[in-house]
Length: 512
Ligand code: FES
Ligand SMILES: [Fe+2]
Image 1 (cartoon, helix red, strand yellow):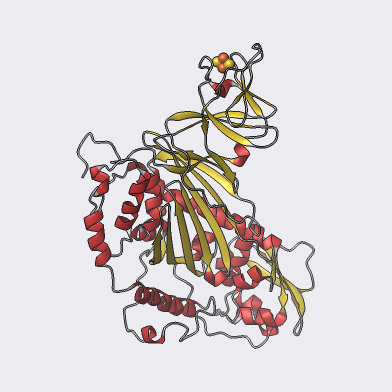
Image 2 (cartoon, rainbow, N blue to C red):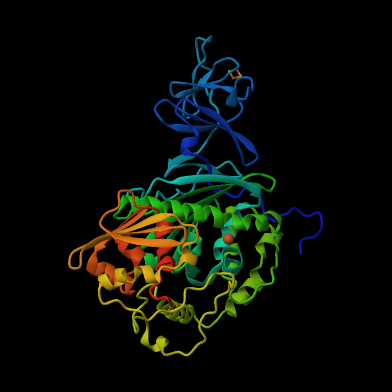
């Protein structure tokens, strides 16, 4: 435990590295803003040419605060005597003097603008950047959605979350987590995790999602995560940028988007669903981060993740060695990491086997074919990976029902309709199926009752467009619905969240 009266974190408030200080959209051309980070006022302005610059607040002439200045052309003009400074900080105009004083310049911050954010280099010694932040591919991705929070914490604590596997069950309702790999470089660290999680968080209560999370840290200010929802062929990107303000006051900038899929409407729906889920899920850490202590020597156990390794990597971003941080968790973490189960490959395979069983039982997808992994490991009789979050709703009970034609599916639709699952829903579900067995029909669900009709409804709530053979495969569990829509093999019009409920409203079998 840290001694009473000691600073909350036994490392400097401001690590060296790139930190986001604004979204690109925060600073319009011709605009100047004062932003407070790293315990300083940073004056940011955007010229009419679109270029963004950041300067220290104090005018070198007589000390006015440049945040009160004005953008003229591509220069920042001081409010006091109208000296003008260009985007590199050089004084380019002293309106009343015949000659600009030599060396007249304001100190600048190193800035990079990319992927919708403005990054600022911070070095406690005032030295320039020693590495460049990676530029992400934007093409093929939806526009980013952005949010900024403030809380009491430190960038190192936020980034530590990515290696803290054992909090993912209690806080984020993940069923199981496995660290697949950890790579460390001079300024980068990459952690790949496999997670098994309920789809309830993304409006798919009947799904068990097999998620690979690829987290790339660039310094302590950039946490770039790519999430592959493998069973649904969805790919999303979440970017977390913690930036220290002063004391333990921390800003967190977040940006998220998804890879564009074949159907723009489906893409937009999924984009919204994942954004809502991100906004509900990520802040679950905040109450804990805001109050937790940083323990120099945490008491770790096997399964906690590579926390000690992460903390040792973090030291390079501070200009000291500080005793406390140098020993931060090293012994305990190393011991815990060493006592972790025998090998990551074996554990990974246990997760996969468990997933195959659960997914197979739930009838929500084809699962992984038997024997697709390492045969030797498949024969191991280890216990399955036990889900850690009992609050997660289990998948619906297994069904052996198979339909031999789409016709039999629709003939039994009214009988299989579950009024309890529909509740007070007022909606029209429509199917437009092509090819062999083609049909257009719809079901009006209102007041706990159902009425089916052949033909096309003038204003359906949800429409599924697909070939009849593909639809037959889907209802028989041989074609994953989300995959089919993601790949463009089918089209879904209307709210995806409502479509996801269809499995419950029209279960495959139901006692009359
Ligand atoms: S103080 Fe800025 S121009 Fe004089
Ligand atoms: Fe978390």
